[in-house]
Length: 479
DNA sequence: TAGCTCGTTGGACAA
DNA sequence: TTTGTCCAACGAGCT
Image 1 (cartoon, helix red, strand yellow):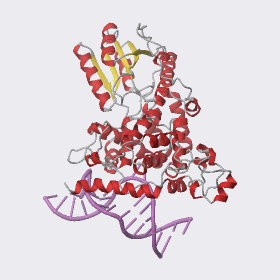
Image 2 (cartoon, chains in turn cyan, yellow, purple):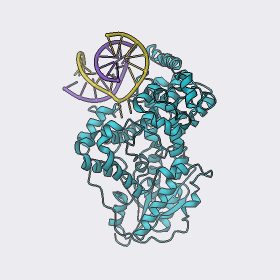
Image 3 (tube, chains in turn brown, yellow, green):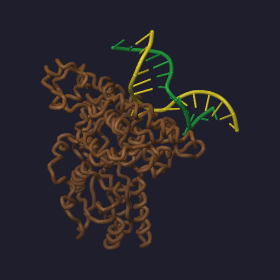
Image 4 (spheres, protein in one colour):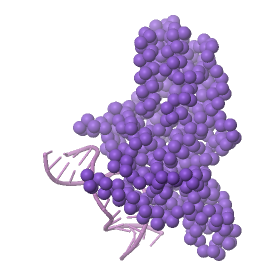
């Protein structure tokens, strides 16, 4: 095989370590050409949102630098992979094209088409796992069906899935030939034209090195308190690895090994969360229609509001007048990320109190999250809306005031992101509309002038949601 | 097969 | 302030 050429198709696996496709290519071929193919015209669920594009720009840049240190480089090509990859493989006389697998339905479909095109012209294809701990088809119930409830999935996962040792990064790479069609990363236009992304750079270091720094900070400092702190948006209790995992700058196998080494059995609460990624991909693989359609078909008839544009905008901009919700939406806008507990609270307000379709929230998250991931995002939104697998019972409607008091008891998270009410004491910061006039005066706050009145009556809209959900229930009872 | 238990993340109210 | 009970009910998954 020496003397032959392999194309390494880089996608969301922007790393050198624990990269099965890369190591396979190096073992089998003398020349390995790393290529990234960017196409903005694909199905809308494949086009990354603005925050993800920012991340992608920097992650591609970081990977190119790493490759250059070892003697190679990343060649970026624009256009549909189904056309570009077979044409390129033919031109450089590649014997093989190799990549690491992705599992979203639209991507899996595209990859199958690319594979068929390559094979039809006599080029071999070799693809590899690594993006998940368990392949979406690896686990099934005793009757052979896919899992729909997390806890049995988790137990089965823990029992059956053994992790191979992560692969070391290569120490040297063969120099690739120049490709005439390669363009600089800047030409992809991934960075936003308005300088909205300043906050992103303050909070994140995209790239493999940044991923390992985040992991080191987490397993050294926080993993021991994870179970207690992970629900606290006012504390740095979570790993913040989600965007790094999404872009494959680090593998879940590397993460699992590191946290187990650092914390032993105490790593279990975190591993349980890590396996949720696998579960989301398992669900999406077996129920691909849930990208847009309710997992529970009963919800097809749910009475979502018809014209929610004005309310949706207030929610997006963090001007609902409900402090915990506004804090979360502003954290999202400034940093491209939101604490998971707060994601549930803002999602509950949108779907239940405002009766706005979960797809509107899902689309906003997809555009603004640096960790936007179809499988995780869709599962989370359907769970909150009550239409998903293993969903929250319909009478579970988060009360953002109670959630704030419980998980941000000092109000520090709200003060950070909603500074106009920072002067309120903690007793009133989560519900300023209930604060006595004297307290508001002393803090120098007039509701409606300095901070909005709440856009909904939480109690009344809760009742309205229960009624709407009751109709979904009756809809089934009549069948 | 039938029966049993349990379900990531809650709220309201009472004691 | 904390703890317990109910809400209302189904279906997934196991034995």
